[in-house]
Length: 364
Figure 1 (cartoon, helix red, strand yellow):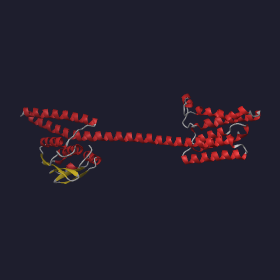
Figure 2 (cartoon, helix red, strand yellow):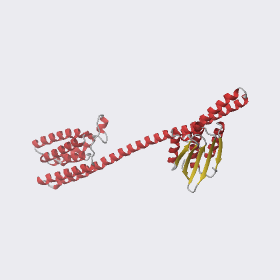
Figure 3 (cartoon, helix red, strand yellow):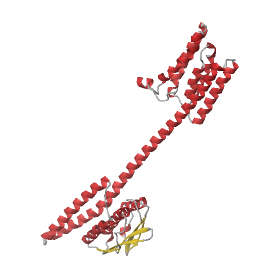
Figure 4 (spheres, helix red, strand yellow):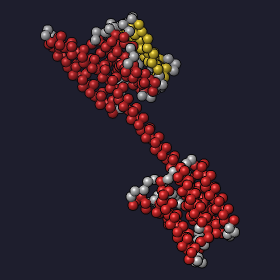
């Protein structure tokens, strides 16, 4: 027997498996003794009056909580005692009281009241000298139904907490996905758009005196734009497929277009796919910073393998502006941290140095 706690508005709410009307199907058990020995008319009238009062209290308790719930459940229990002399199965009313109090929070408090209700019922039965057959089963049902409702209420609380936790996980996942897309778009488009701007400016300068070269530069601009479009689509789909080797080649082209010499040290062939993808995105953002902000003439990309880690160093001979903190370096830090790595930056007026470190085996 479960007692309804939520607000009841529609007919379906009232007659549903959790609705209060369904559980009144046990109420006829109250009148079973009358089948064998009908009571005198005054007692019968008193019994019907008591049942009417019970129904009022029962429906008032449909959404009661706290002290109101305790008061209503206690009133129903006392009403069951008042009906003891009607030659009815008076403990049925007490079972409804136990079902109601089982919804009290916290659970230990509900357990105390269930125990108190059972003890009080047994005590009244003994004090009035009734045979245990008439109230023993009722006491047993008070305990069983009360404990069952406590258990159900605890399960409902856990389910609600689980749903809340799942909603929070979904929210965090959505937020993480938005941040990932933001980082990917920032890292992917920064260098490509810089390259497009440089080549477009160069094409404008060459247009008057060397139209053929200007046309070649504009074709490269178109190719870079198409590549950027493909990268944006891949980033949104979560499939950037970046590799360090490909990114180094792209960095060399971008640096050359900006008039910056590029020196590459180390081999990329022995780096696992996960580390390669993470370092590729770090390299792209670092090179973009060098092109945009450093004023450098030379940029060095060095890759070193150690016993348990891989170090990617990007250094330049500019004014040190390539290491200024912002969304770019923040994105690199977030990527490396998620992969178990770290970022170190240093520099002064003679140049900047960015070091990205990752463990040997890294998930992309």
